Amino acid sequence: MSRIKSIQEKLGRFSLKKERKRLQRNVKTFSIEKASTIGVVYNATNRNDAETVKKFVQYLREERKDVLSIGFIDSKDSSDMVKPHLNYVFFDKRNLSKGLVPKGNDVENFINKPYSILIDLNIDDCFPIEYISSLSNAKFKVGAKGSYRDGACDLVIDIEENNKMEYLIIQVKHYLKMIKN
Image (cartoon, rainbow, N blue to C red; front, side, top):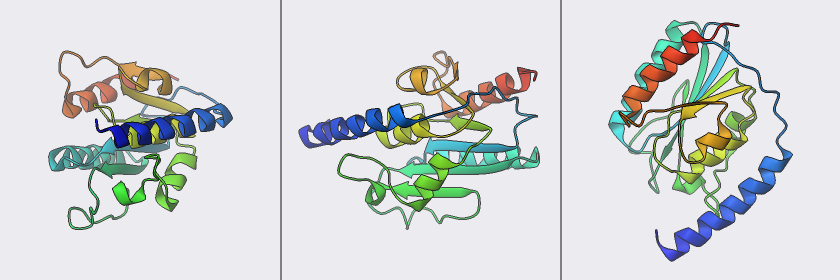
């Protein structure tokens, strides 16, 4: 990591720590059957991962869930890569402050919406996704074990044996179906 990026991330972490203190969440466990709204946050830089998430969102919509996904594209201009449309929101480096904090109406709306479940499909460290996931107003947060997700998510899933997004999605479906409430 470059020295400048390191300083930017430290500024962002300071901002996140300050915002996290203000966060008031009413944690409640939801099964996939009982959830009405689901938010999905992920790194959309890799097209294969973006397609995998698209299929997962389609699956959730077939289960009659109100789903919104937000993907971060690690590029200065993602407009040539993807076109935002219903249920899929994207942001890129242009939507980051100097401290790498995501900004904009789409990001704010996503963070503030009280989803029944927030599913963090991020596997690697990505500060903009960490920021959104950590500050989300979702009632129940789910993600892969490790890094920031251990503190931000209410349910963490160990995918060490197969550290791929596809496997994480399979495990998320499995565990959210197991919950009885």
